[in-house]
Length: 224
Image (cartoon, rainbow, N blue to C red; front, side, top):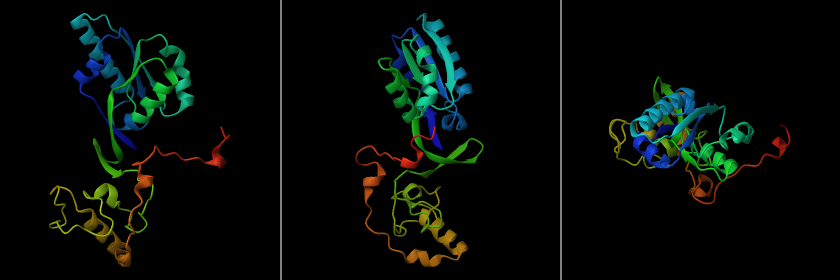
């Protein structure tokens, strides 16, 4: 899932300065699960903005809505006409949702209420851990399902850096060394021979360091 965090209220207020009618639009998927941009968070932010507008007598009007997804045109189409009644839309989706919303609502300004952070798993209640950076060339089969790109502070592909101590990362003593985790996992799987695999020099063109990436599935076109 994509994890996001709400921007500071002062930053949100600054972005909305001068707008009289604002639609806050939540997203019902990833950012809802991580308690950053779902219906509940939309209502909370709307209340804060209304109170601020009343206190400062700005006259700003706030409306609320939450879509199932903001990264899918099908769902955005349902609110295009509603959005035209506002001066701006404050999106509580991830960066992908904000951009698609902005594309479809031109010339209406769409501003982000969240900072998109990383791809994560839910560890326990209220805790999400980064597990994937979407590098586009997955080697989890060789590393026991533990990603050295996301979990090693130096993103090393061929073993630890030598700075780890007692199984902890030298960059963050609270963080397990990813390569210690990989070793332990491969040992448990009876696959320690995979530690001998030398990963070739990485082609980072799949990682997003170049042009924006895309995937085209010919077999999926026209299914909907």
